[in-house]
Image 1 (cartoon, rainbow, N blue to C red):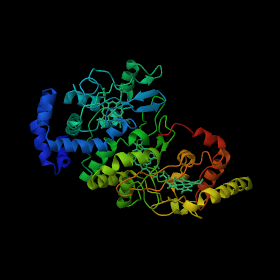
Image 2 (image 1 turned 135 degrees about the vertical axis):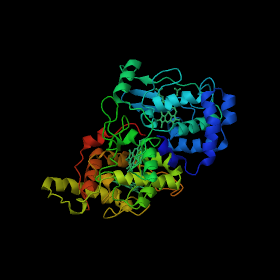
Image 3 (image 1 turned 180 degrees about the vertical axis):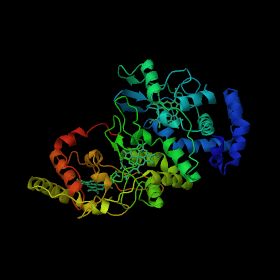
Image 4 (image 1 turned 180 degrees about the horizontal axis):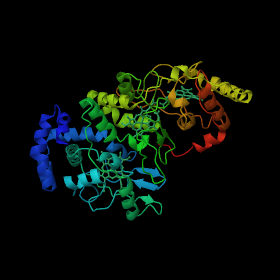
Length: 426
Ligand code: HEC
Ligand code: HEC
Ligand code: HEC
């Protein structure tokens, strides 16, 4: 592992010194006084940056609540988890924790008292984070103002509220280990892989889960987010969100501003861009893009794909959808679904609209939405919600229409599909 470390700390000599001198001492000794005296400002800054990359605040803050004080509810099929307080409060937060305790949580998924943590905390990905990075995040969390806020209990459904079961789950599905660099690839690629697979926890959403909530072996091939009624598309498949044939600059643009002339991030992905990705350095965004481009499959068939002829009944169904489109959607998305670059996404040729799962498209129409507000796109234009304006039958028609107009091709959507896409908003 040590050989691969070199690229890691490129340009952060200050930090290496700080870590060698200070944090190692901190992890060996314990106690708040020593820790805060030795963690230098540079390490704290680096920790703040890495915490952004991991979006720790996004989950550990409830709406309107104090940052990192926890209390946010996460719904899953296994019950409701409430995120804990990770400010350095002695009684209700992690004030008594040592760097080793924190490492045990991030790397092994075990709390200070030995309790196994639920993978609703994405330690299954954070386990790839290096000790040095984890220590920097810990130094940053220690630097926060302690907030006294008692943790609320999770409400986990039986039989999942069981440490033995969780233990078995871990034996079966949890692969612990720091990211190992692939020396046949560039430093940039490795940095991107480290961020995507580790702190970025892209996997946590973009990979299908089995009934036990464990991600499947095929990483990043797309999956429905548990309990959230959103489909996180494959980052490999060209028909979904694979970016194998996108220029690096466009990938960076999408992930750091939330919008390009052809695509837009919505729902949970808009949240990730707003809370986390837009704050990453240009170098790190580029590294991520290089990695994502390398795992995306090219799509040689795209230009030549033939769309089968449609039976008359289907054509009539789509014609009704077209009327809905003209009345409610055309003003923004354009007569031929071309959108307005950087303002309204195109619907023609848009993979988010044509991909196999119509879930996100239905939800966009039901609930509307905003691309993330980012430095590159501070005041995004929004889309109004239609759930109270048009009936499910019409939503089904218009979604079927936009999936099959202007050269698009996708399965038809029924009113039942629309109803089944309702659910708690992210
Ligand atoms: C997707 C939501 C989510 C994200 C992102 C997330 N956490 Fe958590 N975290 C949780 C949940 C839920 C728990 C509670 C797990 C349990 O009790 O079994 C938790 C638990 C923890 C714990 C254990 C606390 C204790 O009292 O045992 C620590 C430490 C922690 N998180 C730190 C972090 C850090 C640092 C980051 C960012 C690198 C982070 N979390 C990002 C959801 C999240
Ligand atoms: C909280 C869940 C979640 C996490 C974490 C997450 N994503 Fe997503 N992502 C989604 C959802 C849902 C969509 C579909 C909505 C959309 O298209 O924006 C999506 C869409 C995307 C798209 C396609 C956007 C488009 O419309 O063309 C890309 C690319 C992407 N994600 C990359 C990533 C990367 C890289 C990471 C890790 C740094 C990541 N995602 C982490 C949920 C998530
Ligand atoms: C006022 C302008 C406006 C109107 C009217 C409008 N939209 Fe949108 N639409 C937007 C904007 C802005 C977005 C990006 C929203 C986001 O990122 O969450 C969007 C996003 C979408 C998306 C998601 C695209 C993607 O790449 O993820 C779909 C699908 C969509 N609209 C369909 C429709 C349909 C169908 C109608 C009519 C029923 C409609 N829109 C009406 C502005 C509009």
